[in-house]
Length: 321
Image 1 (cartoon, rainbow, N blue to C red):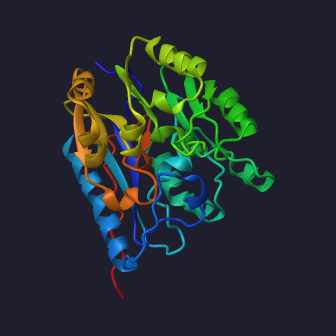
Image 2 (tube, helix red, strand yellow):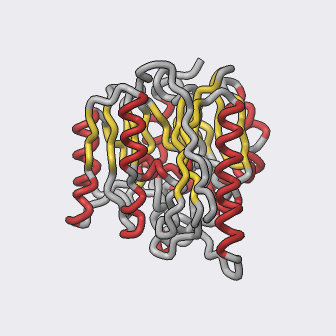
């Protein structure tokens, strides 16, 4: 059985209406691709439909899905809410400072108010003011959290500042485990959650991307310390978004949500290691992946206690004028 508290049974998704790869994040996101020659309207519709498909797949697996639409035209990355929002079993919600200026508009009061109404939230910790000092920490993109062992795994990048990381870890009771990870071109990996995922009984980790042998060994040992099976990923598999996965709690047990592309890259042995305790739930999101993130980036886990029986919310699409 999965470790209590690690796999959320409810999630927040944001379905965009004006999706496009963000030009302000292209410089340091090697996973991002420019949508050259794509019709913007077609691109946006495909991303909208991919979020719908993910919401349906998670719902069918027994996960509570709170789906919010985003009709705003100036939030190209709003499909990735986990970068500005995290929730915690002690009843706190954290809001994070974002690196790209046009991503700062993604923080939504209606999402926070919904969580406060539907779940037991006693405090909202807003770190977003650090943006004014050039200090950033992009949520559970920059950090991969072990909610049980209270460890925050962090790859150094411009998306995570040591000051903000220290403030979060001290305030929320996590021990930071920080390391360097680089792509084939020697650039820092922009978000930790594209190279690793910590589940209840296993952890996927792109150990090849850590240039330091000492840090590779330290990370592998720390992941295994709680009894998890460490599933190493190659750099090529990380490039297919195999590390960008999230275990969630379905009605029949743990489910690993990941993209169809990521699932196809796994070897038979890696699939067996995951399937020893969880079912694979692959969903095709090729349009969203153009923006440099995949299924895990699309999911903000809800680790809060429901006030009553929570009915999943889906804010309907705006009615065309």
